[in-house]
Length: 582
Ligand code: ADP
View 1 (cartoon, rainbow, N blue to C red):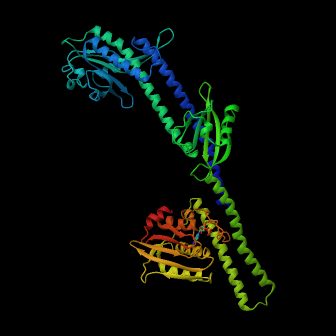
View 2: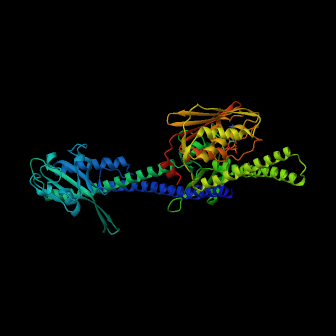
């Protein structure tokens, strides 16, 4: 038992630690990264605006939105075509992951869907040479120039061209180049009027390539940041914990899917006042407290009963979120659902109470009858026999309980219950169980419903006995007013089916799927006086599913009765079962 309780305690401790501290750290980190990305995005927009303004007279000096950067680049490409008298202008960008140069929009004189043909390794062709060496190149005849053999020029009717690297340079305050990076190449193809490109064209193209490179780099960076921001938002959105970010003005900056579901809100929440969305005062107070005091890691426990949902218990933590400069962005609240943990805690207390009772009851009987027999040896033989029988039964009951507890401890520790498989005459086994159970009750009729011929199956005889005994025992125990208990045996293809049907109390529908859970007991007025540990069916399920690769389920109607069904393969795959239970 101590191992069972110990495991439960460790589970709870572990879960609490991970759900609280780790999650909070992770969320804070995500939030901070998000804030940082936002700031970078704004910064970039500003910079792009000025960069564009400096390089292109057409651009406005205001902050350039991303679409404006794109337009500017398109105009620049048109201008290159015009100034160089080129039929086609194509830019290629170096993709680091693939090591390839790829045609990217915008282009001139080449359809954007054909741009995909401009794709080659950065070690190949004129494009690769210009990219690697960072020096411009002119070619006068694409067909005969050996350097151009790997470029896709001939298919696109390219005769001649000039290619320059797309370079971005970082400069210091004194305008010295501190960093140079080649990001791709810029081509101008087919000089109009059957002319050839010359050195003047190269110089012009190099100059315009600088502006193009700077815009492309900014566009790419912008795109990367937008993607990363999107990824971060998605991560926050899909967190299992509820997350709410509230601004200093008390407005919702972010609320993930879990939080929307916890507070039962539909639709957009961003920008709304937190106190319109969150109705729970303790949570609002916690957020406000964290916002003002800056104390991190404060946590409270609240029960939230949102409309149309059963009540759940949450541990809520709030912490300030600051950006890199230490500026307060808002307060984040994280809600962790601890309902199951609380239930487990409650079940643990109930379990300790029932086990104590279950141990005390047989011990009291054993002690009582033994003392009586010791004190007085004048009882008639029939009475003495009855006392000994009771002592014997109570000892069996104690042994069963202790075995159950030991088995549960083994299952929890991940150990196997060590099956021994052999051929089992299931019908004979069931008859024996009925015979034994008959001794325990006078109120019930125990009957067997089985075909004349029933096949032997492969299984662990002891464990199969335990399964049937447990189900029969429950059927009797939970039919306090008597009635018939029927043990059905059926054949179904390659399987056999055992059914234990009673006319007892039945199980409320919401409990039916849960009765196989560890410690799960139904607490109704009628069940209250029937003692048990809530371990029997958990063991049955393990013995059926893990040791015999079968299935177990229950059907029940409150006040009418229950039937517990077990499906087992006739020919158990012993190799597989032994592998699973090694
Ligand atoms: P225990 O009987 O020790 O409580 P079990 O795991 O055997 O534990 O059963 C779990 C719960 O399922 C029981 O507490 C009872 O509420 C319900 N139950 C099991 N068998 C029956 C049955 N035949 N009829 C009604 N309720 C049942």
